[in-house]
Image 1 (cartoon, chains in turn red, cyan):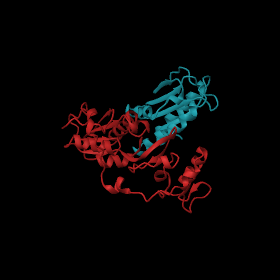
Image 2 (image 1 turned 90 degrees about the vertical axis):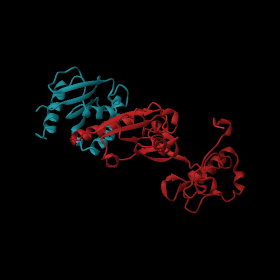
Image 3 (image 1 turned 90 degrees about the horizontal axis):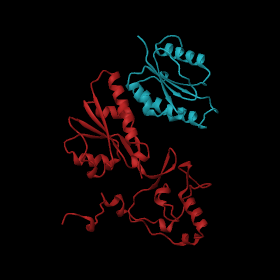
Image 4 (image 1 turned 180 degrees about the vertical axis):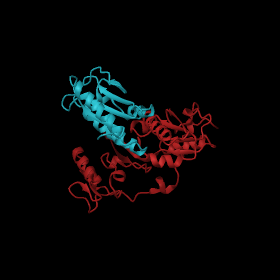
Length: 222
Length: 118
């Protein structure tokens, strides 16, 4: 899932300071699961903004709504924007931009910082697992990604900073290559480490510019 | 001016009591409390908020009251960002036969949030 983290309320207030009717818009998918921008968080943030405006004698109307998925236009049909001057989107960057592209004359602001593609380690803890590099090599590394899990994105073993299974950037961070070694050892596939992985072609990643996936068989237009 | 105080109480820790200016909201366990409940209380005019939970080790659901403590810290952080002093929300441990202690907690809290004796 995409993991996000809410911006501070002071940052949010600063973005919205010129508007009198604001919709706090939650997203019911990834950011709901990571407790950053779902219906509950939209309710908490909207309530906090209402209390703040009451306490500061400001007449600001704060509405709240949550859609199933902000990054799919089909879920935006039922959005009620009558009189709304600005939308504070609690979706990831894809959701915020979809709102902006759909409602072209509506100012849209991000309520979250989109952090990474990750997983839930335990309740309340999420960690990064994928950089979306566009060319998956998990088959060669025992299902542990050296791009996302090694701080230097190394492809052929650890750097000299790996110590006791930890990364030199922070002793709380596992060395990605130690994880790969341990996993391959368990699978009885250590010999696969003898294969030298070629230099990575980053053109499938961000180096190739904004990316797009097209499935002609699914398209409705001719 | 009277201070409107809301108290979120574990139903296993607090009996029905009638204390002026106190609105009691019973929960099946204090662990049911969410930051949204705390925010909504202030949005609806609360001057202060009490959370009354069982003593640690006495939770019917084992760790509900421990979880409440963490959730309260999260909510206090939000309240702090909108200028609400964290003194306005207090958590106390009581048990069902401590009505006198409950009254003292409420009175002390009233004094505190009205700027009286600490």
